[in-house]
Length: 288
Image (cartoon, rainbow, N blue to C red):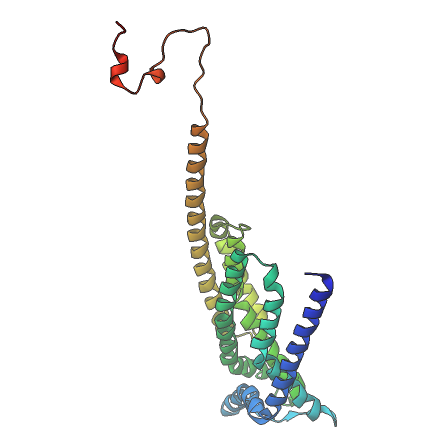
């Protein structure tokens, strides 16, 4: 395909992707109140728990400018529009790159997308469930003589960061499987580094989670550790299958090499060879 046609196709697919995002953003704007309630439920649950424990917490979420309510609503609608329209713009990306992929690469890409989607959703849900406890612990450090005025835009950025961290973290074992499938890492290497990887997982969870509560860290670290162990098991199975295939290919090569073996014959040797025996037994009778 000429370069001009590639550029034309890229332009068309970008326009379709942008149009899908715009439509999704406009549609999400009609559900702004429901989206806002969904995002602020963890905050108000945390405030309610703190008040039950005797802490005086100002539960109001504030804006600091005249235009902030409008820009905040636009941000929420845009984020929701990106999520809602993701099947469309992801398909446009896929349709643009798929002609350059081999059949085996297409199969791996489809398998990756089929597994990555559910893992991303599971990570998102896990992060959302952890948020109330994390917010409660962080706001619990507020002294009695101080007030904690939380800006709604800052709260939105905090929530989106935590949800994104959890969602992406659940994808890491899938990338491990892909690296093994490409031959970049083996199951033995993963097994040898298992202890360090698990330690790194807990350190990552401690840094990524929004609180100093060990329970919140464990909620993220345990699923990631379990997914890594599953990925390691898949890597071992893939290595065994690859070794068997290599062994079979090696036997086939050996057979081909054996078929090329020739019998050397000395031209000065007049003795008959067993290989020259006639096929018909009658031909073996002595001549009269």
